[in-house]
Length: 193
Ligand code: IMP
Ligand code: MG
Image (tube, rainbow, N blue to C red; front, side, top):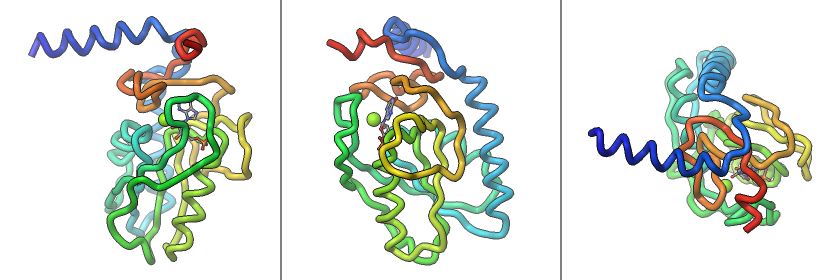
């Protein structure tokens, strides 16, 4: 048990050398996620929700959020290609893993880690809407409106953040940093090499 714990701490310490500063602490995230859950619980009273997490970034946020939604719900995951190994959007969105059931007549709540250019979200909303759900809404943990390329507004947003590349709490750079328990700004030299 102790050995495992020490290893996990070591990994986090190593990664922390690449973090310029902490933008959102674990505590701040927890508090805001509870508020979002409450809001969603109020808005969807009397209905049943399909919560759709976008892999992999939204996994941590979604795990916390659904425990704050006091409604009957089911959840599933969608995987799409977006950035690959870069910090810039390619503009190409493709579904790699689709929902496992029909979403016809279902209230869909898409869970995103971050809305940046908006390309991913716009594509997903249009794609899911064509399948005749009852509704399609979006909750995102973070919103970077300064980088928007297409007109898309999340229905629920945890935090509006400046135009910086952030990692942690599910968000990655080259698949790393997802396990940080906070949102941090990556040092530019960490992705320049
Ligand atoms: P969009 O299509 O440009 O809105 O990009 C959305 C996806 O890009 C997110 O789901 C993230 O995976 C990734 N992304 C955008 N900005 C960041 C960031 O600052 N850090 C890590 N991933 C990001
Ligand atoms: Mg990513």
